[in-house]
Amino acid sequence: EHSLGVMETASNIIATSNIGKQQLNITEMDILCLRIAGLTHDLGHGPFSHVYESFLKASYKQEKEHPELYSERNAKFKK
Image (cartoon, rainbow, N blue to C red; front, side, top):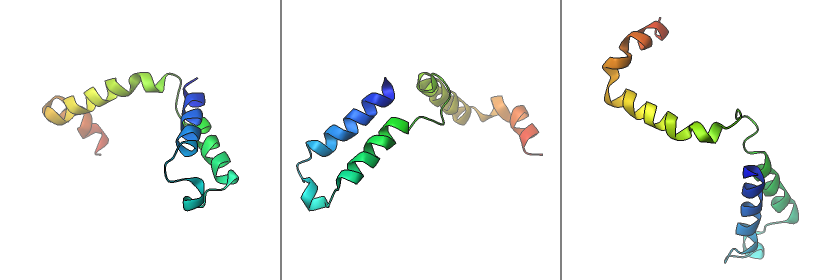
């Protein structure tokens, strides 16, 4: 559903743009490519990947604020 929504939103942005297709020289092929990009933008993600985004951001913030908590782990990867 998410990817279908992104595809539809991308289409709506172009369709309701105040600039207009002629000024930007947007072709029907461009619109099709935009729709396909919206539909396929998550193909490389694992299942439920968007659910974990806030968790990953919080983890990253924690590590940046308290690098001492991760020094042993990080040392293993610097070898």
